[in-house]
Image (tube, rainbow, N blue to C red; front, side, top):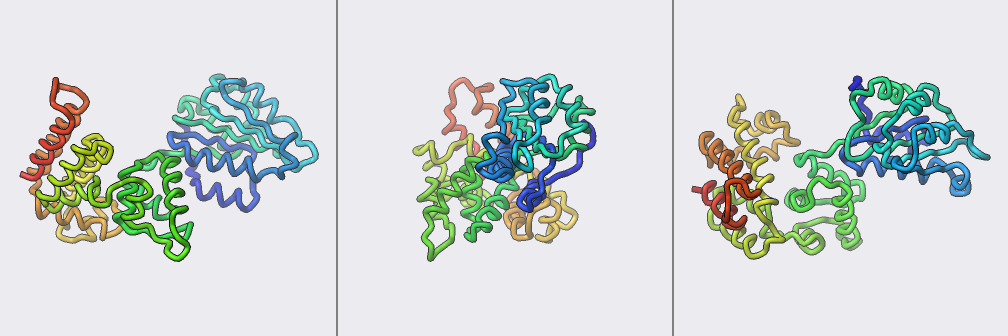
Length: 342
């Protein structure tokens, strides 16, 4: 793909909130949340309500051609400063020559918004990408990595003037995962439940509103394993075995794999006795976040960590039916935890 200018969601929203609109917005990527937020904002704010009937057009990519979109974009607004053309599911428009031609000479009075979800623009269309960038904004909405979810949760709640402790943050991140639309929906549900006099999200609130046990969850299992607390780890595993919806090998294995993978990297830190150095080495948000890795390096040897990672790969394959004719997921879960702790 042609080299792209890095444009952030925050910078786009800042411009829009200041009333500055570009002729073209091409929004693409795996994460639909930011694409929807930008396109919805433009749909709701670029025109006054009474201007929308004649000046706002919404297409679906599977129902139109590039020529039809380009023709609509070339129309002039009717008794308004601008017109808005939004194309949802733009990835379904295959032949883009007419749009590329339009992008090279876009109409200043048109705001064209292309919403390309579940993937990125074809990297072979270099001229098309170049034309989009010259005309307006090309924005990639990338999936958040699991390690970035806590920061997203904290920042979202902070903007709503609500505080949350690290344990509650991790509980929500582990339970919901990186589907930002679902995550925000769950956070909004939590916000509605908070009394005006106490705007804090606690583990009890998470348990009540999201249905994640504050005592038996992936976060607590990870903590028990980090500290080699065999009794607590077995308590949680037995709870999971009896309550599959609360947790299973499919939900906690990625969490544990990520921890031990980072722990293996931590062993190679030149100054691994320093919590600050380990945090920087692992690109963590703060020295506090390295605490579990300091504990892990005391409780596990580098060789044991390598063996655990190998065992996790084996358990993951077996949980998906590879070389495993009849061992149920619950037994695989118990076997893996026993191997890690002994």
